[in-house]
Length: 311
Picture 1: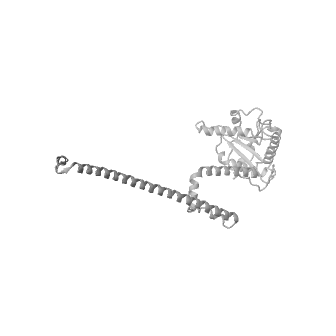
Picture 2: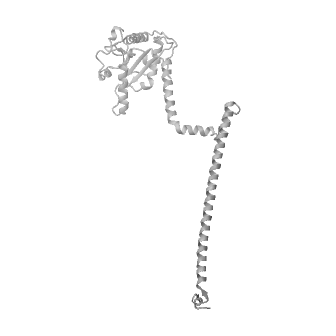
């Protein structure tokens, strides 16, 4: 063995052997890297192929769906299939019990329903009043400080009914008596005092109210002494004073079984313009005198009649 051979060996391993082994490791590394890259490319290709296949199937299913719908539409147009085959079946909700439906409706709409019912009742009452209203033949206002009349005013009307003709021709005898306390107790409820004053004012604006049962003290207190009532002596020769016919000269106390104030008078309002229908005012004026004349002369014109009472 020569010296060169000895120099190329170290520890029994030659330099050429080292070079060969180093080259083999690099080649193996590169080969492994290539194989991994190749495997990744294969996997990527497989994924892309699966995606493409899925998209292809989706397109085919969509195309098939369109084709099926087109065929069904052609069948419908040709009268082969009923329309409801193309419609989706709707899921029917279970029917709500009647009691629950009513309760639900009442919960949401009770206030409109209540208001509507009240309006309907008011309209019906107004219509019935308009159709079946009975107008009084004579209206009388009792103005005196006699609170017993709050319960006896109808007795006064009943006592006069036999002497009252059916002036309005409705087949009923109706004498309406309205009681208004002349001097309300100052300790009374202010609203009650105001209500009585308003009632008195309304009655004196009414052309239907002719006969006023009152006394001189009340007339003076209410300032009703000037040009309000007629001269009673022009109608009745006896039993009168300057204001009206003295009620104690009649049998009214006996008729109602109650002693009336000896100063009570029946006064008759003079018809005046500006208080409703003047012609009707004059007619009521004449009727009131006729009633009182029949009463004081005991001229019964409606025997057996009873006074009409509004329900």
